[in-house]
Every structure is written in structure tokens, then in C-alpha cells.
Image 1 (spheres, rainbow, N blue to C red):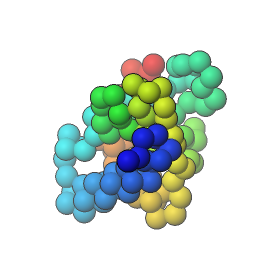
Image 2: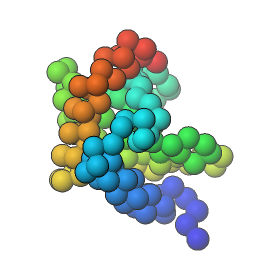
Image 3: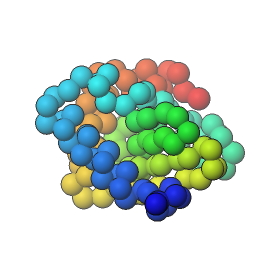
Length: 125
């Protein structure tokens, strides 16, 4: 049995990528994928090193999110998948590259075109 986030991250990441690919291929409604987009301004929590947008995929004790680190024109330069277990105070992250990066970059542009990025910036934490 996989217990830590580090042990589970590849399996969870592959599942989330297959969900996103299906969403993208079927041109799903944004309400069918994930929960919300938030802007995490620098200083949102202790030890935060840079601002980013977090797209929360799930909630609960074990939850996950995409993190988009953008340039001033809001183009993602780095994207991470983060898996967290708040019950165990455990987390693991994976930097996204290659084709997966391009898919997620396009997903971010999609949510930006829907006005979600501007909304998140106006409601920053």
C-alpha cells in the first residue's frame, strides 16, 4: 500500500492527466473539472517563495492541485502538480514538462479566456 504523498504522486498524477485529457478532448464544461482557481500572492503563507495560481482539483484530507507560475503577461513558465495529505501533514510535488506542460498551458489559456484568471487576481489571497 502506498502511504506517503511521494509514494503516491506518480499514480495520482497519471490519473489526473488522463482526466484532463478526456476533459480537453470532449470540450467539457469547466464545472466538470476541478473546483476553483485561486491566485496565491507572495506572502499568502509562511515560506512561500513565489506567487502562483492554484487550480484545486479535489478537496478533503487528501487533495491535489495544479500550480501555474506565470510571467507578467500571465503565460505559465512553470507548472507543478501537488498532492497533499492534510491529515498527515504530508505533500509532494512534480514539475510538469513536455507534452503535459503544453496541455496544461493550453488549459490555463482556456480558463483565462473564460475570465477565471482575472477573477482570481481580483480575489487574491
